[in-house]
Image (cartoon, rainbow, N blue to C red; front, side, top):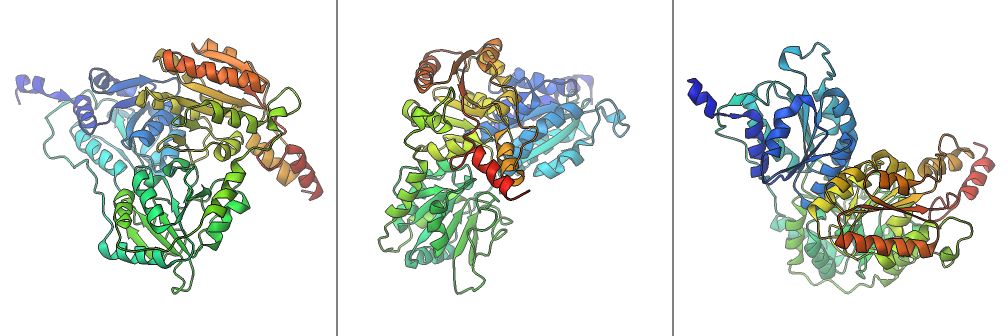
Length: 569
């Protein structure tokens, strides 16, 4: 090959970024590192991709994960070697548990130094294998385009998830021939077979109390899911933190199968004689510790059918009398057209039972003391925020009130990690506002989660993203405090300094900040934050002082401590 021919070749990084852009991947979130200089540069030079520099790799991964939840397409997260890859791992694990597509590039030490425990070297393929669908290390620059195309296909086909590509630092800058044959990046979307459609529709039609459990796989099938529920007069549950897949105000909505799910909400599921699971892997939380739905050992008692795009998920948790491998939207569209005439069924009692659990106690607005009742905060949000607000909620005990009290009326308005990882809210809101600049985006976090990744307020400020961050500050690692009180009758290591001046913290990062401890102050702060978000470019943090004694919707710390002490643990 002549030197003139070689000069016309593009770098491996440029070829990789061309494949990402052609697959409509629009952003890469990163803390830049020396082992992928050319990759970052190649993205920066393109007009159809955006390189977002974050303040911590954990934030970068949560941003990529949140973007994919809203778009259905993976975003890119990039980090360097050992420290960067370690920081990134929490958000990547979140993507794995949440079935979220993501492309992860991990800079690695140069090829000549691999295996010598060189500076910051970790075996990244071994490290990332358990938390990704596929992890690989590329050792030839000319293979990078092929591996990138395969990564996109793997991340988006079947059950979606993250894919990690480790790349020695000397490969991205090498010039390579233009790739020829590449794997296709458009994954198959299998339909529901006619026989499966007919069997499921006849089963639902003849059942006395049919219900549907809809998960994240139905995120893009909101219209079809409503049509099926109405056609078969079936009640609908949403799986853990997938409350936005079905309109919560619909009379067929029966509730959210989340943590601490009230007994009265579960009654309709426990009494159902036909449970159709669509697009849910039936996680520990959704199944209430693998208890519901319970497939019958007797094949004549056909209680559970499951539709999932991933064959390994069908029947993985409970017995099913029929399992179908199909994409949720196509399957539901077929069921909606099935030639059957189901009888009328009245779900008003079950729907009303759920509604009652979402209603705050009557006295929360007059809570004594200098701190707000968490129910009052959610109630104020309901009165103030638009119905189509994109709500990004963190992990923590405050979320028990949010998951119960906020009604999701519009599709794709909830971004929430089922992995239980703290720190997802603020970075998730940054990505959500990049994807949906004209929507109201509100991050909701406890003080624990807010101080893990709250520095991404600087990223929001730098990018001119007027997100709203509502922090429930109770000076406590509340979830663990609740478990300790209930199990041990005492607490350890859960008290965190407070109240902290989080409004000043926000202002120090270029955002606006306000502190509230009364309902009147909260409503005023939320209204002003919405006005500022609609007309400005500065993020706003609302520091809400909440009562640590109100630890969960149905109990208090004092009650749990007494119970734990009584049982002598």
